[in-house]
Image 1: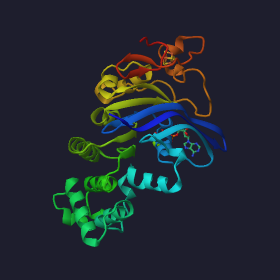
Image 2: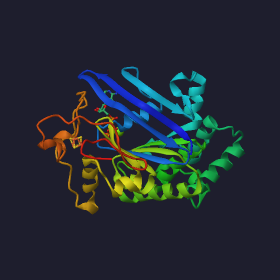
Image 3: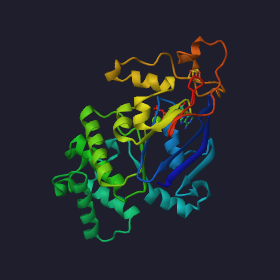
Image 4: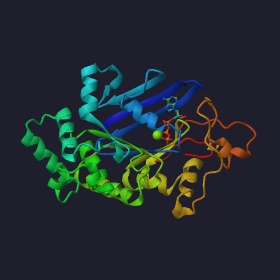
Length: 316
Ligand SMILES: Nc1ncnc2c1ncn2[C@@H]1O[C@H](COP(=O)(O)OP(=O)(O)OP(=O)(O)O)[C@@H](O)[C@H]1O
Ligand code: SF4
Ligand SMILES: [Mg+2]
């Protein structure tokens, strides 16, 4: 499979009133066609910054370096018109929560307005037909009723599916989802997981999902990258990383799952104001905290096919 998205050595520093924030310190990854890649990490680790960088949303007050290639083209060299097409037709953002739906606009109008902006479909009848088809695809048994409903007339689960219908309506090549299950109750989360499961079966979708929810990456993603303090610490096939986690941070995330006894990770996340050249996880690491000197993170260690770990204690 060829690369749809390729990110190379992405670094982002924000200048804030409290000083320089080292949000991303050199991450590289790819998303192949038809693949769902998950990035998992705790708060402040740089997940949203990755999404913003790929969506071209990093503000002028930040320094950004590295390469973002979409279908082989370096995004930073694209002309304004090509960028507009890229972000309206090729890459779509799945909004984080159902509050993104305008309560005064009917679901059908939400979909039609998006289709007008990002597809070649013209004419009221064709737009309505496409909107109804989409609602059927996203499991609305009565698509006509959903089409003429305001968001407040639908359940949370229906609004969740309507949001997904809007995001996928222009058949984007890549969908980016930033914490798609954050703040959802269990029922809504199940709706999301079921819809993703069906989409994976029916369409050849490519997605980048960033989340702190291990259940989402385990159930939905093909490959995952675990991020800590702006750097990847472990990457690989979701099944391999979940069944054989090798970095102490990945292990601690998995041990914190309810099914594994809910043992929380000891200590606090590091400050993003420090450009730490040693291992940022050392103060929390069972091996590293016994050491007197700083553990410097080695280059990646290959522990299996596509399974990489950045840790001195792991041998290839
Ligand atoms: N615009 C900004 N200006 C200054 N600092 C920022 C800005 N945006 C993010 N940061 C900082 O960059 C670091 C990474 O933030 P980011 O939002 O990418 O993390 P995250 O992994 O998405 O966290 P969360 O799980 O809480 O959403 C944090 O320390 C954050 O405070
Ligand atoms: S590099 Fe050293 S301190 Fe860091 S996680 Fe690995 S063993 Fe622990
Ligand atoms: Mg975030």
